[in-house]
Image 1 (cartoon, rainbow, N blue to C red):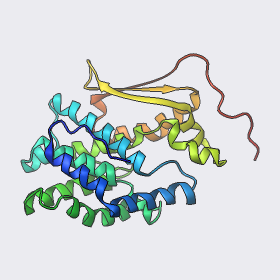
Image 2 (cartoon, rainbow, N blue to C red; image 1 turned 30 degrees about the horizontal axis):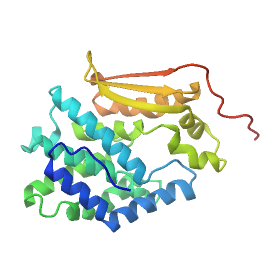
Image 3 (cartoon, helix red, strand yellow; image 1 turned 135 degrees about the vertical axis):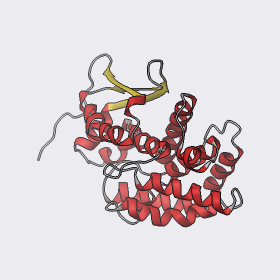
Image 4 (cartoon, helix red, strand yellow; image 1 turned 90 degrees about the vertical axis):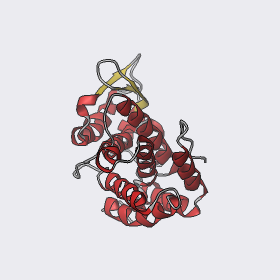
Length: 256
């Protein structure tokens, strides 16, 4: 499954994504992470599809926020270009969950260790030593801070943590739900029918979440909201969720 990304003439990003697609090692780590998540723990998708969705959401958010005058960390602090910030968010999105190849617990820490050599391989020849070290560091920071409890310190990292939580539509939970994983996480995910991210008028970004059942509010209040509050980006976002039409039934019955 190709990692399809709108490059917008960003040649570095095109080459990085091509290398992600061609790397058996990267694919193997992401597959192993997804095996831990779905087969061993009964969680929702943390594999290649999830990584691709997060990367596209993050890239779209970055481009809108930059258009509205926000400065990425690599531009503000290191003098790199906006195209390099795009490389950072896409790489961080692609690799943010690779630590789950080891275990769900402490997967952020494992992920930084696993991602470091992968990043050096994926960036080989695209940057000089100094700039490659900067890009690697910024990607690792975004990976390290994509879970609640570690504050993102850059625009890129804040975007990745929100984009990760925005992949909440029901398809992510369909496999564990069909296998009998019935809890608030799977039921609330099944209630989300779609997420739309677009440029706003009064704020830079408007995020619209369509729910088929009010159980989806758990995804928003418990999983998305804490990410937004820690991201440093809450003043640039407007999030709305709604149920249109008749509320659909997700469960017929549950026994404990």
